[in-house]
Image 1 (cartoon, helix red, strand yellow):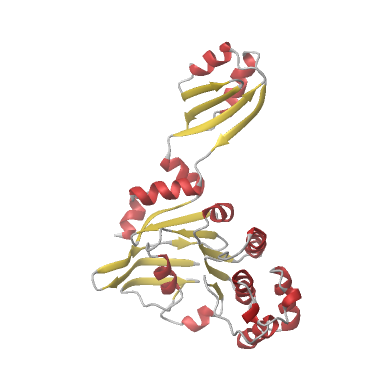
Image 2: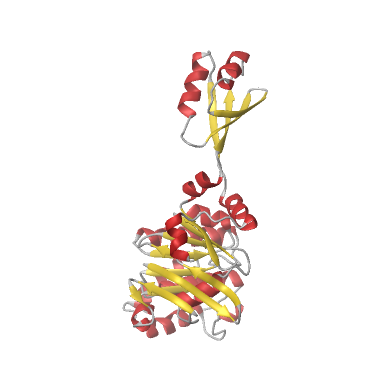
Length: 317
């Protein structure tokens, strides 16, 4: 759906994007992450055909965007961080204007459905100059969906929204993805990216450092997993039995709560539960504490660690 090949954007000698090769498959929700100044916006502008690469290629829907970008753009919906609105228009007039441009059929029904989906139906006759930033952002999302695009490019889509608005947009993204839409999200709100995205790409200083699922990123970044196990009684026999396992790398006891660090090569929870039961213990609960996307992001970007495979690194050279 989206593929870039050795994408380079230079300003004099500064490389804003440096040999970027990424791939977003059809039907994915893909999170594109990086610190400020990492090259995210530059990349998005090249995907949209607004910036011309110094070198490299951009393919959308399997087509090189330099060939027939007008037909490609018709299949895309875009939500930018800031909405540029006609302030004297009402919300309904604004969407009707874009429905004209897109040639949308049954536009009144479609506009009402989208305004309801983003909780703006009751203010459809209010002028946009009176809209808050969060309301503007939700209207931009409705506009992006007017023509039923196959691909959504979202740059900070929940910027300016309160928690209720964020949930509304999150639910809408999930609904649109279930309809088969491919969604590319760039956001600083890592908790939302972690909830939504099946795969993430992390860029720093213009270069792609990681592109994988969260589970695979965790496996690459840490050798151990932390488990919190609550027991009815943490007897000495249980502690001694667990301490003898070679896959357990650390064990701490606080009253009836055990914090155990185990190797991350496989899931040992069933084996641990069985060992506790054999010593007469009763497990009330096991909580697996995994590395969050925020922790992975900070580790990768602060240390500038590349988690690309040799094949991926060769493609980026």
